[in-house]
Length: 428
Image 1 (cartoon, rainbow, N blue to C red):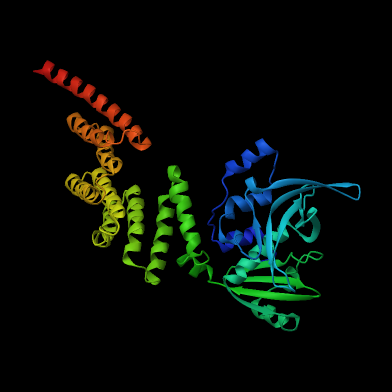
Image 2: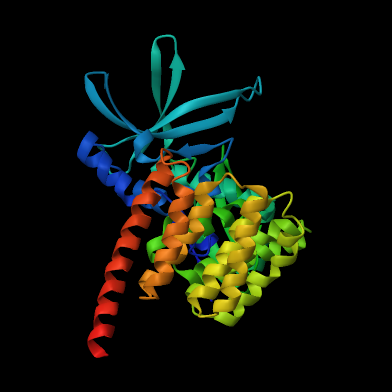
């Protein structure tokens, strides 16, 4: 292993997050290009697509970069020169004298490859723009360093003590210098062996060395989400499981979920709080065809669910119905019927007027039987029970749709039954 010198800040962010990503949908960029002529520069697009929704882009006192819908184009004239700005975000900071919050617009000059930055301040005469001594890359560097320092153990060394530290760490000082002329362009380096980041930055006329100690790559592999906050874990899971539902990587979703459950356990979370996570773990394992493990996770939540039916009937009904679907899909008919009955009992006792949910249980079971080419008579019976419930409130948009679905399934089942009866008669 070696020390990686003068990292691009986007590469440093990738290392920090261990390759995890959660950002802006690609379609948002395409939409703004077509409808508004707003083209997001490649490095900014890369940042937003990969990290736009992670906490590195949510610092209350610092930079926040917008998604394409929030960006804007500004054209200015300055000393007979036309300046084309792309407003990319905001900067929230404290006034050094009054300690009051100040907000600025942040833009880059889109005609220059280096993308020099500018700040816009709201005044009575409109927004006044001023160039600042950094570029888009410098903004990324500041965002990374700010986030790194807040979430690591950081040691700061001045020039007098820096040489000894550099020698002890095995750093080659010739390879580690901040970009001259830009105060916000530090040199970001990473020690692959220790997992520490070294940041050499220029402060006024002096150099400062920040060493942010973290877990080594081996430790990081065993605990790969140590750089990810609890909130980010939840967002990463939601992005994989819900937002990417059609192409969900259930192994990845399960790994995230196990980390969430582990942290909840360490924090001493209430047992009922785990039930949703157990349900999701069961669903992931079901999708991975690990049926025995899936059943164990589903069962983990039953005691807390059963003891809280009175306080949380909706949660209980949903839990029982999910288990019923699991058992039905894995050909455990009796267990499926038992869970379905529990779900129905909760609805009838605590939500007897919820005709949509009651009818949906019948309708969903009929649909599952249709997909398996099950007994048409049972399908017809289930559809009739569903229709009886939905027709109690036919003007409800949900019930109205389900009435049509149940009628269609019943009609197809009747036709299939008729064909089956005809073939049976012909064979006699």
